[in-house]
Structure formats: C-alpha cells, structure tokens
Image 1 (cartoon, helix red, strand yellow):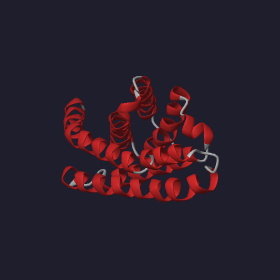
Image 2 (cartoon, helix red, strand yellow):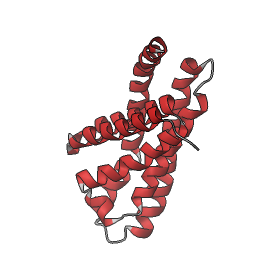
Image 3 (cartoon, one colour):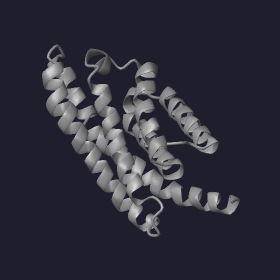
Length: 180
C-alpha cells in the first residue's frame, strides 16, 4: 500500500506526540498518559487510515518502554507484543466507522466497544496467559500490579482516550474540511 507524503508526515508527528506524552509520565498518571496515547492512536487512524494507526499502535509501546524502562516489561518482554495487539484492536474499531456518513454518531459506540475489546484481549493474553507462563520469576506483589496495569488500568485509559477523541475529533474534522 502506497502512503502519501501527508500521511507519512502526520504519522511521524503522531509518533512524536506519543513520545512527548510519554516523557511526562509519572507512576500515578498511567491512565492519563494512556488516555492521551489512545486518543492519539485513534485520531491518527481516523485522519490517516488503518496502516498509519497500526504503525502508531506498534511504535507507542516500544517508545514507552525505551523512555520509561518499565521493570515489568524488562522482566517479561512477552508483554510488549500483546500491548501492541491491544492497541491494534482499538484501531480496528475506529477504522470500522471511518468514512461512514454516520461516523460521528457511531464513533462513540464503536470506540467504547473497542475499549472493552482491547481490555478483553489484554486481560486474556497478558494477565491470563503471559504472566502465569512467562512471569514465574515475578514476586506476588509485582504480579498483582501487572494484572491491574494490563487489565483495569488499560480499560480506564482506553475509555479516557475514547472520551477525548469524541470531544476533539469533530473539531479536527471540521477544521480539515474547512482547509480543503
């Protein structure tokens, strides 16, 4: 698939925005940071398309790990690909309503469903499979923190990203429409 220069540029800007958001990450602000990252991923998908959304979905967890040096992912690197898969799931739900005449009406419903689907995928893959199989060396406290971080916290972050997107996307769409 051939990407236009504008799409490549916007995708690069979105990756840069993800990095900037991740630089200001404090341990207590995971849902806030995650909500912003989810919003960036969703808006990029709506504006640039599926391929761009998938690129951001894969790049964001990698840059996050590089920036934060998460001890959880360092101890169990198998978590990283499943974070990417969770992000791709919400991208697919955003993409499903893109370019439809009822997009603004269907978008909130689709993104809420996508948030729960992301939560389900990450809970089943990371909490129910990766941590028990590959995280045998983790302390019980670390397992509990990981289970919360990669299930409930991801749901809150995805729902926060959904809410932000539903507020910001109509404004962006109107601005893009006027500039053309």
